[in-house]
Length: 195
Image 1 (tube, rainbow, N blue to C red):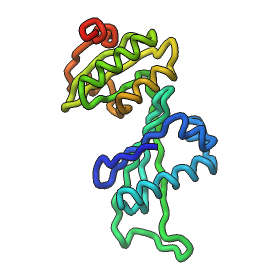
Image 2 (image 1 turned 90 degrees about the vertical axis):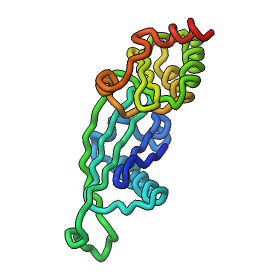
Image 3 (image 1 turned 180 degrees about the vertical axis):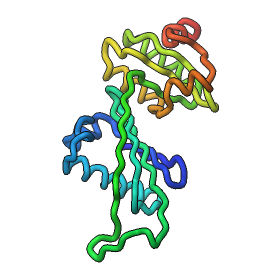
Image 4 (image 1 turned 180 degrees about the horizontal axis):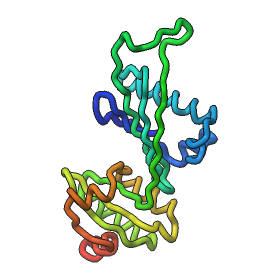
């Protein structure tokens, strides 16, 4: 599990498929009101609270982005409330009301701090018989989108995660605001020019 603070009241939590299976959960459990899922969510909020010193109390909006074979990203937004609006309970030092929305993704999108990571990743993917992808650039960050992770989705995702981080941006935002560097055959093109 990886935590990242996005703003003063917004946190990004990335859970791999392994993180979920270690806790006996699957992505489908989010739709159920299971005790395991609620326990995991409260554990994540407690850890985020400890790491970032953020008091999580009141209404919490949770956006869950399912990232195909690699796991999920959750954006947790702590909604601000006035002190006198908070209910008081002697037995509990706070309450959390969850509002969960879920979005699936067909395209796997990873971000990279520099082009050298993309070049090295392309060679590893190519050697594993994996090609395709489109490369974008936005705000000093490179983005590689992969569609149709055949023949081995788990291997593709593990290689991507070795060099970059899953992105919560949509491909539409990159197309609109980013600069497309290589369309459709990014892996093969990078290998052709750099190796």
